[in-house]
Image (cartoon, rainbow, N blue to C red; front, top):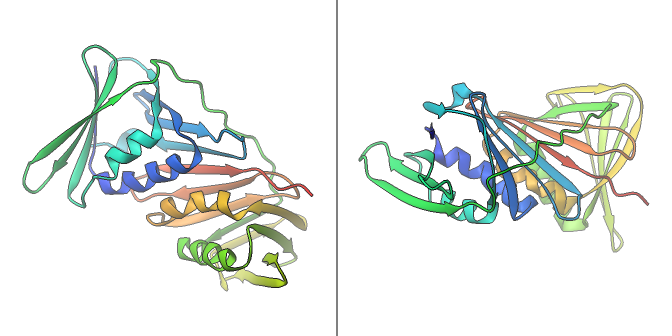
Length: 250
């Protein structure tokens, strides 16, 4: 038996929208520890991991751990239909061939049910990366969105530079330049620099973070020179999401 009831379907929508920007297919792992989802982009530039713990669900019934592969773009089309008052229920059909996804208006009790065929009744284990970042910064999600919107005007490569007590974001292209220096309290929430670090990342890859940033309480960015960037979100229901982005090496 598999049955999960998540009370904030509209919040889950932002998580799935981000996953759909990474790859068309992804893995879902259901267990007594909750739901874990992960996927990697076909070009291996980005990877996303989502961990939804048991206390985030209103109901969680999993007889035994189950891993499945799904079409994330199809899941996204379904979850996008969630309204502000909807709860989300996920069940496995009796034949074990599809996930039954139900959106229920908590005020009216009206339900809508969708069938999501499985690609496979198996899933790979998450490939979490072990990094040793030399710069860690925490920022308001709106500031991250501002950075990406500003950068879009100039170019598609954002260079992160940390030195002493500040981080600079730089973008250049076609004779245009952009620079934003951030310090603790102006406007960073926190900053730790073990050693000066410089790395460049694709703006379009970083835009995966826009959707979860919409509901996140804070965003943490961790990196070191020419190493992958780790973007971590703490979400309102206790969910955690991590996005890894490979650096651009010149």
